[in-house]
Image 1 (cartoon, rainbow, N blue to C red):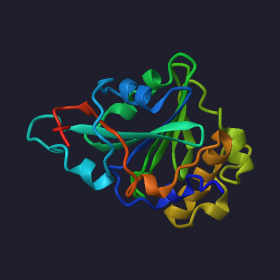
Image 2 (image 1 turned 90 degrees about the horizontal axis):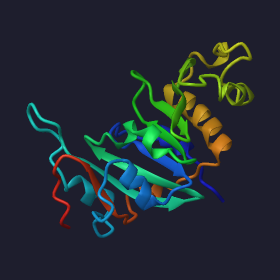
Image 3 (image 1 turned 30 degrees about the vertical axis):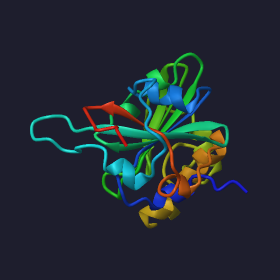
Length: 208
């Protein structure tokens, strides 16, 4: 049975951003996020990925790494360190592909979701702040958010949700995204699974 993505609401590490892409392979996703096509490491775990780079350098950019795989009809990339690959969503989604970027954060600032298709960033919003939406088509997911009891038909927040814990709010909106795009990702991919890694920024030591 698919596990969905609602569990992402419980991520405590705000550095573990996730990019999903449909219509391209995991390798192509890594390349579009800034990786070298032939630069994959042997499959490694989450803990081993954190050993690859220097995540902070005074007055310089830190290193950025992604681990990539495929699940449920989507490719995915787990971002580490100073990765800016998720900022390239238009590039990731070019030539008919689709891309969803989830940036987990604690309550303030909120986690965010972005959606792009065919080279265009169509919509995005903060979880718990869905009343403020942006992109080429900011209301693209409004019907889904209304059907998922996140927003009222006029785009305002349901009063009953305003005092809920932020994790419950996140899970509700992630459920809408999960259902709309058919997204699913096992929690095991984040920690135990061994996946190839690519450097997407800086000069991490990729020899593992």
